[in-house]
Image (cartoon, rainbow, N blue to C red; front, top):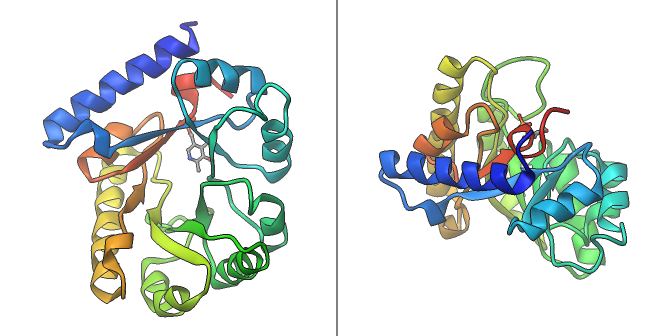
Length: 229
Ligand SMILES: *Cc1c(COP(=O)(O)O)cnc(C)c1O
């Protein structure tokens, strides 16, 4: 298998090529390396290859990894990309740069409450179910529109954009990415601070090029960097 450094380099090249064909600047797309189920040693290897932002999905695993002696002194930017339950918010609140998977008002409320307690400011994304699959987490698009006024008022947290996991079927995924972008556009029209709504977290190993074409600002890539899980 190719080394992690080679994989990261290859993906950066694919990002550049996708941006070129989409008429975008490569600097407008951030690569989040999804390290769930992978050991701290591989995160370190990716970091040494120049990767700064990492995504984790499971609270317990994330805490153990972020406190691992191999990693605890290096300035990794951690993104929490998994489904976050309210009762777990307090464990991660002071350790993450961005929370991608907020999918209900009650979790946002908890995030806000804990951020106030810790005197922190937290950026987050709402997870949207763009595929309509009942098995998937995420708010329905109309639920997002109905909730944002309440969300915009919550102290110490800032909605920065939207996140989705698309259908495995690539022909459907492209349209789902587009719908996420259109939903973000409509939120900008009702937001008191539209300049804050900049992020579209969409695209994974199998579909990030399509996501870039539809405006992704963050792609979450796991297996194409670290191998199969
Ligand atoms: C696991 C995971 C990814 C990465 O998936 P790959 O197909 O391995 O690139 C991206 N986003 C989320 C939310 C994930 O849970």
